Image (cartoon, rainbow, N blue to C red):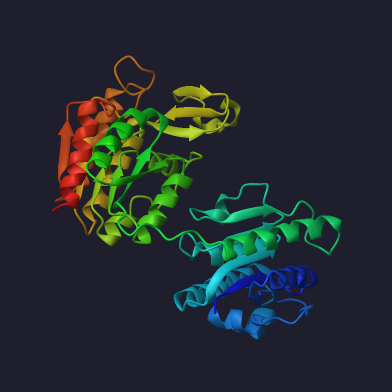
Amino acid sequence: MTSVALLATLDTKGPEAAFVRDLLRSFEVPVVLVDTGCIGAPAVTADVSREAIFDAAGTTLSDVVREGDRGKAVTAAATGAARLIAQWHAEGRLAGVLGLGGSAGTTIGTAAMRGLPLGVPKVMVSTLGSGQTRPYVGGKDILMLNAVADISGLNRISRTILGEAARAMAGLVRFPAPAQPSAERPLVAATMFGVTTPCVQHAQRVLEAAGYEVLVFHATGNGGEAMEGLIADGLIAGVLDITTTELADELVGGTLTAGPERLTAAGRRGVPQVISVGALDMVNFGPRQTVPDRFRDRKFHVHNANVTLMRTTPAENRQLGEEIGRKAAGATGPTTILVPLQGVSAIDRAGQSFDDVEARNALFEGLRATHGNVPLIELDQHINDPAFAEAAAHELLRLMTR
């Protein structure tokens, strides 16, 4: 029988966790209460003790208490919870995960959730639910429910929110998603930005006509992270990585980075991939006044009131080209790099605000220096030209059917 794992620090959230547990049981949903606390005595009895959590993390509760470092305790609890939850899922014992917490509980609960594949119910009641949730959600399907008030005692607010969480989890468990069709089309992942939309949409039509289902990811940091996660989970048959702009934000310090592991999952799994250099002419920031002062002398394009684009320099482009070349060269599966010599975004072409031949050439030189044995195909076209999109799509089809 599968059960919902209910994660909470029972020294500080005991009565609240018991309230949710009892609601789930009243809905005839099996639940296992997991104690992820370490400081005070648990207020209610857990089904899985805190000792088991820290054992799974490779340490002991007594060692954690003796050290007295709350940050290290939370990190260990997150590690242990993630390992136990992954094990229960692998054993077919897990119906879903529901977590309650402030900053520590949210860190622990979502660490366990992020280790699970898409489709496994994940609900996190958090005092951080209305803020910047990306560090907790990452690229996974985690439902973050704002606690509104602190999770400290049972009152008219907490009962309402905790009741919503219990009903949401009960609904997800008792009304599972229908079985997927047996003859699904293979999945292709593609990356797109507003300035590369014509290219990706044209390539998407070519791939769909060839019998593939295309998942398009908005290259805003979270999009690239989500795509890398799905590739790592083994769900993707091919990758059309047209828009690698998140690498520029990671390098320069923009707001839309997907982290240093971007452009690695397909290479590690041996998934066929076509890589291009879409939107590497730009680094993303918020409103103009939020751009760090160290960039005050750079070239900018105000996309709208909330988005400011900064042109990458020749030196930055050289580094980006070298990084892409190195990552492509290290891939274990079929890989091709496709280069649009006439521009890498809608605003990087003759007469547009980010047109910069020197920067483009530096990007291409970086690629040429590091791509190794991976084919580097240079086309005298702009990235949004239909011919470039068709070349990218057909090259990916060739790699996938090799």
